Length: 279
Ligand code: ACM
Image (cartoon, rainbow, N blue to C red; front, side, top):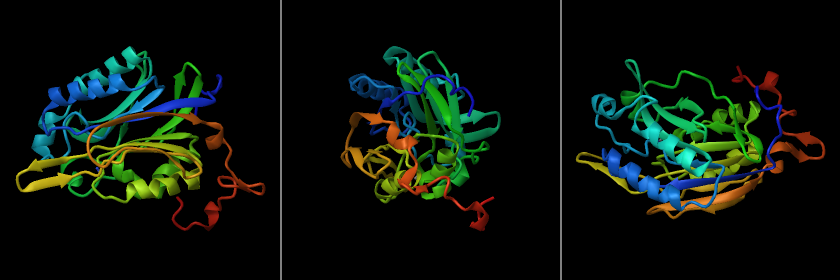
């Protein structure tokens, strides 16, 4: 990863906002998320859920297209405004229109308007009918904070189910995984300690709660947004229902030392030549 020669930060104030969006109410959802973000204590990076401005349960691709936006659209403008106002990085999910393609994306926006976009690689269930799968590999992103530079990695919701997601980001140097989510399954919160332990990284999973009731299509979400440490400890956990905002100061030394024992470095000890699926 380039751009990391400068001072590395020792700590990162990282947090999540857990929302309960109303499907299709872009303006109302952004207004409410703004109120919640404004309540957050000072942060270096704040994570909002997947598709937090639109809601999740699009009935078909046409409906998703109608609510999709480009990087100049209302959701990315919202992220820019909050990042600038709060002098921190803000990441959240949105339906991204790119020509005739449609992605389930997350934009990470910095206080000076810097922007990085991740397009969800592992689409969940019906999402395959709605979105195109992400077209760029997992990559660590250096973000500059007033305390120095930190390497973060973006993944979205169901990406958690594929250990390769977190592993690829860790191998690329990511110290903190930023994980906007709309979790439907209830197993991710229990799995993230393992993802963090096996990669010695932190993770901030920002989930939504409530449900999208679209007539015959009804999808409920599991809340319990979570911040997880490299030793598998859960540093913060939101309730299953309702809204929540949490910010935790992360000690990044824990993510930079990849030793498991004095004689084992979990990245150096990998044996890719023995892994038949490692390509
Ligand atoms: C999910 O990937 N939103 C379940």
